[in-house]
Length: 120
Length: 226
Image (cartoon, rainbow over all chains, first blue to last red; front, side):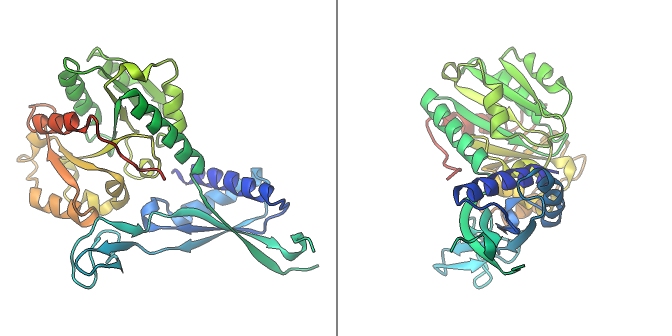
């Protein structure tokens, strides 16, 4: 299970971003996860619950936004959602495409903080 | 108590630290003129056997070395050392994959400028290694004829991060009634356009084509980390 390594990396990156913005307390950490990231969402959430205890945000939640796999289809000259992770095929013209536009994401997107954290 | 919350937008890659290190490694390898090839596969697909065969054939022509990742033993590194090229074991303990910092640490004391090829054998695992960029120029994913033609469909992500699929243990294909067409359909479904080679480290079948592919790589470049 590599999700624990990823959770630890995530908390490091989140702590760094919070420090840069002078944020003391984080309610939730929001991430984007693509199916081609190789990360199992449920395993990452469990790993996060373990890893957060030794982080600056021991009570924080992990909020995961799933993103779809999008490929670029040459014949359609357009971005199209892939049929599935096992079929990187255009749903319109059925041409396979290895050009992945979206789906590998593993990104910290936002820190959710209490309003009281915001200085007037 | 005010329970209102708000979102502070940030946009940072979770594996930023690894990606930065991997980019640094890739720059170093390019500067030193060493071609770095990594191997990923399930346990037992034949990474070490293929590496033994490759090192044995390349060492007369090039300066080659290998790093070998394993959870606990150094059996593979000892096997590869018999090819009489520099090898080093990376013992990962409980970690099921290699990360860029492990590669950087293993290379301490090595002058990569004195090498033409460096091979990195990842831990045998078709899930975890997919996520980590090691600064390699080419990633080979191995898949043996004994594993079932649908292996790529079961582990699409690792096949998706690889540049070349190497079907191994070709000498056993007939015995296990390996269906090459079905395997190719699985591969092309999860990674359209992926280059595929079929080899047997034991009989040497297909090794010539793989060696040609590696020779052609020298001088090329791969941009993986952003």
